[in-house]
Image 1 (tube, helix red, strand yellow):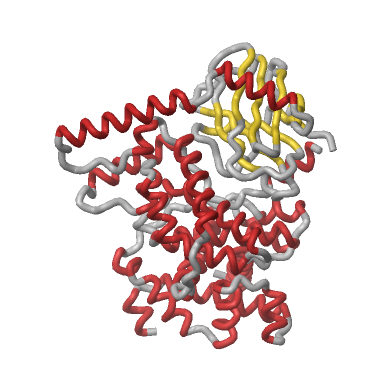
Image 2 (tube, chains in turn purple, orange):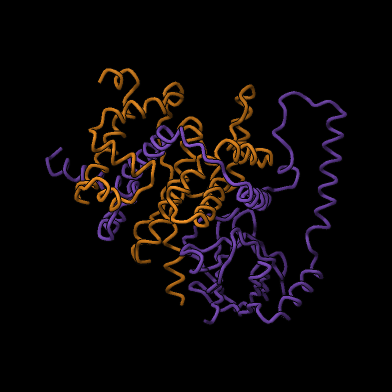
Length: 260
Length: 221
């Protein structure tokens, strides 16, 4: 390896270390982006991140601050929403890992009853189409509720899709209405809502993954994973099955901007 | 407006990509069937959708995440928001945890650091710079680590830290443990900012090299 090569490697590693430590300048960030595509670099980045995390655990072992209970409660609630939305059925969420040995009949019966109760409860808990429409109408009737129409995003559908977003900040509830939105195959890809809320965060809030299962008008309840402060826009992306934490926004067919 | 939204969405690519949920489940099942005598880790149980694992995770790692969120956040309210965001990331990435490549605490610390540093960057930089620095980071393929070494990684990290120069150790401790920005470290240590950056970056690179060495070689060096 030439001296230049060694210097290049050292320079690259220092950029990666700076990224892991969060101290890159804008100019360095641009240089980093140019080198992040190759596998060796990503491997080195992962090792540096792991090193910093291991050191964090090692020197932070004495840290004994307790997570406040009200924060823990909010985290539990969000976990329930997320795990439920990612779980293919209710049973998978409520049951502990299956034991290696066959369970006694009485235990199986108890599990069956628990699952049945849960499914029964959920059939009441999940709003049906009518109550969704009613709730949406009552939201619209409130003066402070936001209502904005969908417009074509940067990668519009072949045929125009109409509809709107209704959002109430006070109750943190909202609905999306779509007319003639293409039906998706949920085993391949799903729609995902993003709520752009610069007052809260530069990063869009995940508004939930959903499917369109019928033609005509469809109402979908918004499932914001974090508290929304003042939404500036709502965007729909098409993602792989299960959704993503961060969207590359390669496919962004619908956008609803809230007029300031 | 659309331009701002574009930047806003792309600038948040700080997390590992998620694999399809179904794929994760298949992996978990495979792992379970081959190691039935070994209890699943908390993250594996979360990936399997086990509700009680959420409480276990909060009990086990709530203090770690909260301590870091406090150190990296300017206010209590910000720390509360940050802790919630971190746990959302943890739930969503639980299926990617591979116990042969990192300990659970290290994996959670990685997710926590990424999220907290990202939040800090957003308050410091212009949006245009963020989309550049937040390129997607995938977990690369790599040979599995020795389980014995993984179990000892915390002790090894402490030994490796002790091999750094005093300046490097002090700066990295302030940066990694206390979450102090480097400008603040420069002020605390009365040192030029450029020197602080160099010490920190080179110190971390040395730590990585030291951590990669096998136990015997590391102990001998």
